[in-house]
Length: 143
Image (cartoon, rainbow, N blue to C red; front, side, top):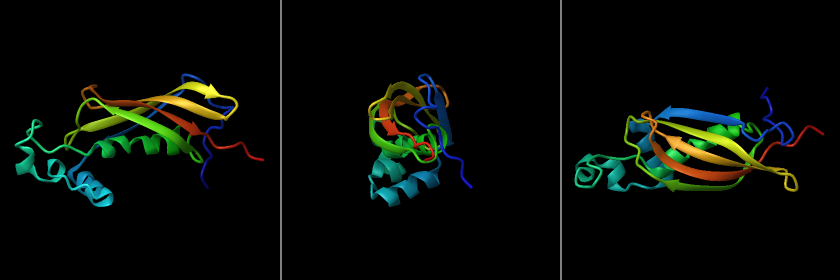
């Protein structure tokens, strides 16, 4: 049995949650297959050496996808529906980087029973990879 996520009433401004993952070679190839994005900067080391990055980089969307386990499994958790997500990239992720996606509740919208959060993605050195915002609909209380 799954435990339901936090309801709108249970969530407090300032609540935080995070998810951390090391981005592997396999992750990059699987994401390329799922998304259809086989840009050589992601999958061809020889090509990537000719770019400003000097090596292959992970897809921005792959790092961005680390938001899903935060929202869907932690805060608010099971039963959450994302209504809106915005993300701005600040740096790249290389294979082997460990990325942490963290959310913080910044606003509760009483009329909509929705929650707004700021999002940050940082690498293992604490360097900002990306930042953004989201609006989610937490699970409804049991009827």
